[in-house]
Image (cartoon, rainbow, N blue to C red):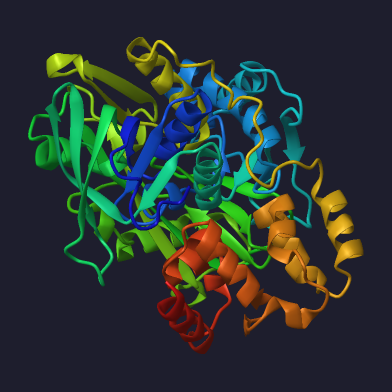
Length: 506
């Protein structure tokens, strides 16, 4: 249930999860699937911060091997295959080319890393790595003669969050967006929480909820929740690291992505994005301040352009950038916190504390989108000591909403037969975003007029209504950047029309 206004009164929840990023919705989905009564509270939109600002990859983390994080890489590699089977509409295999520069990393080291990458976990759907030589047709500069090819997985990160929330809601969880937890205390062995409405037209609305256990999955705000709502010190310190990306018109026509080494030992990805663009990132910059205010700076832009231009024949300038985005990663800070940002672990830590009257508080520190499902499973396993009735985990084999099909082409062909009056470009986007949920949008439609008002090319009222009523969309940003990526294509007039419709119907 969406619980858009407020949750049912006088309910004692088994679990309240604070945070609507990938870890929060993952825990809510796992816990609900095991029979717990769950409420999730998010101060903004689902995936409105770190979880929609990733490099859009489900990957083992090839470079993490240099820091001997073998357990993390092995777990992440195993999760690639699991997640591919759970959500084929929003993720798919992607090949990567790694041009070789011997003065940065010797060939034997890369071969060893790729051998481990191929064999640390079982592969069913992804090919093994291989050595490649570049021809005169290469999109790279002539000095790059050889390299390596391997495979990982592309993902629509924000939709992964929304689909997990939908899955949890379908099992009975209450998903409450735009409510902030401002106070949490324990009375009579229960958490007593004060939630405040963050919608601008309802500034004074406040509700109280009760729960047997509390999960702090607020990502970059994990310490803030301890300080301002729980009024106690956090058991761990996180180091906030900013990662920024730029989007430019498609840099080349090849289907592969590129992974570029830089002299500072960092790597930059250049990834095919939304058919007509290339996504370039990321940076690693220490960040101070409110994670909600994060944005790219000129040094980061110059860095990404310089690395890319060092490799490709096609040269980029500032005027080529059509969009940028930044996110803050909450990385676990070691005791001696002097490492460079890129050397910090991307692993996670779960802290379970039995507060006064043995009331549980579980806090999530760190993590990456690839391992969210395993993190969530481990989190609920930890809480099982407080809930003897909890069932076994089910998310490993459970398909996310819209993912009950085998191949994009077969679903596209099926939709084209049933809705042959719709343009192929729209149906392709539906398959890549909604999968079989496309039928829910298109039910009882027989002609283009049945889609309602046309806001832009291939974007109609029926889809917008679906996003409002089923996917918690309330603002223009929710619709054109997190539920879809139409923001890359819309003009100002089209954006204003969508904004006006949202204002009238929310």
